[in-house]
Amino acid sequence: MARGWESKSVEGQIESFENDRTAEAKRRLTPNQAERLRKKGALKMVRAKVLRDLETAENPRYRDILNAALADLDAKLSKLD
Image 1 (cartoon, helix red, strand yellow):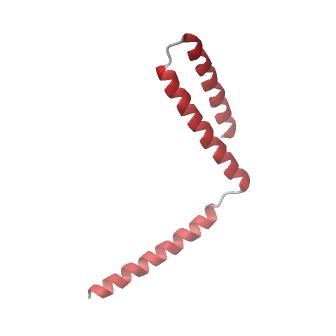
Image 2: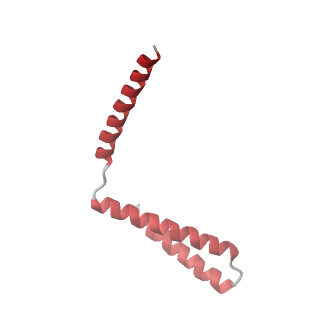
Image 3: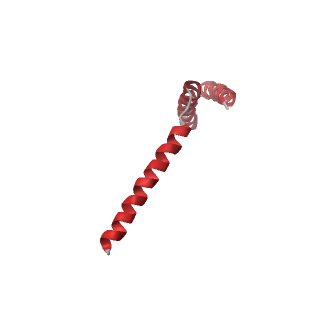
């Protein structure tokens, strides 16, 4: 009896895998979409670093530079959306 349940489970797993593979094929991105996604990810990483630096910066001039960089990054990110 346990083998019967086990085979049903394996059958379900195979079916689930095939459905996932079909869904993944439908989700494939065009080269343009992949490039935009890559750029967006890179900008978000740089933005996170600027925010960390802004939290610890004490020099007012450096804080101004970081705030300007943050505004520029936000503008670039909004253009990608």
